[in-house]
Amino acid sequence: MMCLIASALVIAGSQAAWYEPMLPEAAGGWRASGAVRTYDRDHIFDYIDGAGELYLAYDFRDVAVRDYEKPGAPKITADIYRMSTSRDAYGVYSHERPVNEPANRSLADIGQERDYGAGLLRFWKGRFFVRVLADRETTESRAAVLAIGRNVSKAIMETGSPPDLIKQLPRKALIPRSVRYFHKHTVLNFHYYLADANILDLGEKTDAVLAQYKLNSGKPRLLIVRYPSAKAASTAFSKFTRAYFKDKPPSDAPVRVEQIEHGQYVGAKLDGPIVRLAFDAPTREQAQTMLRR
Image 1 (cartoon, rainbow, N blue to C red):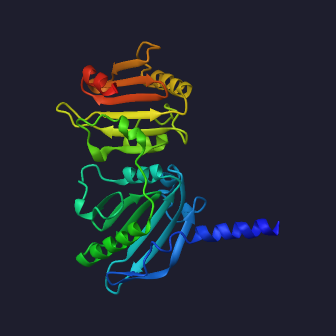
Image 2: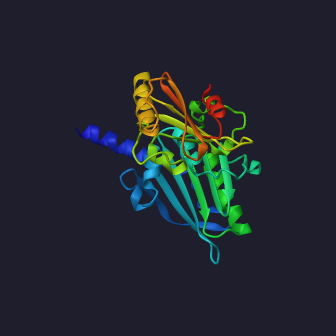
Image 3: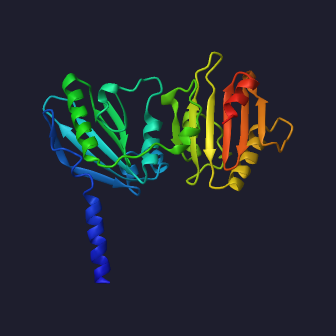
């Protein structure tokens, strides 16, 4: 029993220090104030009460937080969120990134994807999602934020790949930074409200991507959901069509396109373990086109 306890302590100790090489003691005249604070799944709400559910929806493990101060200058806070997989690190980043803000190519040495604006740097790399925020942006605070971000990025030795489900998205007319990856319907509803109820049976075992397209006649959205089995996908497809097309004649067809309010079309297609859904299409033909692989 003592050997087991000792082994557990060794493992816990090694995990507790994963953030040490990432967070510098100083950067650009700012110095770390206080010790690094850490929060795990059971205590994330002690740090970010309003947004804790978001990180838990992406299989969050823990976060390391460090504050930096400089007399007469804005405070800087660095958060390093450790997720279980690189897919979920990408997912959190995809959830937060602004759609219309172009990627800053001058920061290509930070993370695998990144954006910066108004004192806030965000990026993902490997299993990690990182935020570095200055309370107020100045020329000096911007330089310090980026210096901290580069230190964190350089210290993360691993890299990861975006979810392979993204490859299912047609590239033509895609708005690249509109792509969102997630698992649960609460995240879907944040970006595109579908229903209060979970009518697509989204959950921890599902992968989903949502994207918007820029076409001459509108900005339709495409949602692709991959289920753990073809049976689970079929059940979800039936549940969705019954709920969303409740005012239409029932049908067991694996492809349905229906006109709903405001004259827009919604399409749904069952394809093995995958369900494809097109929303806000201005024409039936466009909805059908978006459903094709």
